[in-house]
Amino acid sequence: MAKERLSQYLKSNNLRESDVRNMVVEAVCSLSQPFTAEQLVEACASQQISVGTVYNTLNLLVKAQVLHGTERQRGCKAREYELITGSLVRMREICETCGKAIDYHDKATERLILDRKYSNFSMHHFTLFVYGECKRCRDKREKREKKGIKSI
Image 1: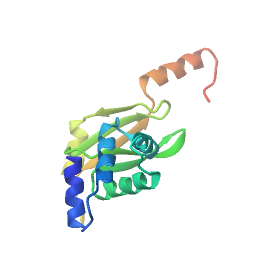
Image 2: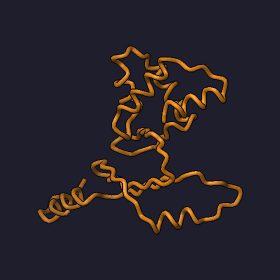
Image 3: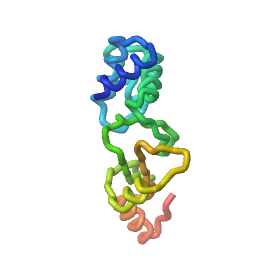
Image 4: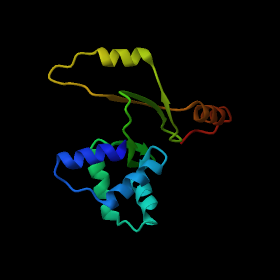
C-alpha cells in the first residue's frame, strides 16, 4: 500500500520513480512503528543509501501521505514517523516517563470528534495522543515516595 501511494503521488506531481526510493519505502515498512529518522538511516545503511537521500525520501513520504510525523518528548525532542494506515481514527496513550505508547479505542471520543461539524474544513482522519504516566511508572513512583525518596 505504501509503494502504491508513493507511486500515485509521484505520477500526479510529475516526479520519477527510483529504485532507491523504493528501497527506503521497504526499510520503512520493515521498521517497528513509530520510528525516528535516525533509525531509518540506520536501516538503510547496509544498502549504502546516503543520509541525504533518506531524509529527502522521508520528507517526500510525508508529502505523499505515506507517513505522518509527530513531535515527541522522550528525554529530548524528536520527530517520530509512522505509516498511515487506512484507519480513519488513531488514539494513543503515551507515558511521559518511560515512553511506552499504547493504542486504544474509545467509541465515545471517536463519535464526538467524527460528528463534530467544522466550518470551512473537511476532516479526513484524526490522531489523538493522551500524555500521562503508565501504571508501571506510577507504581514505581508511589513506591519511591512511600520510602521517602522524592521523584526527580
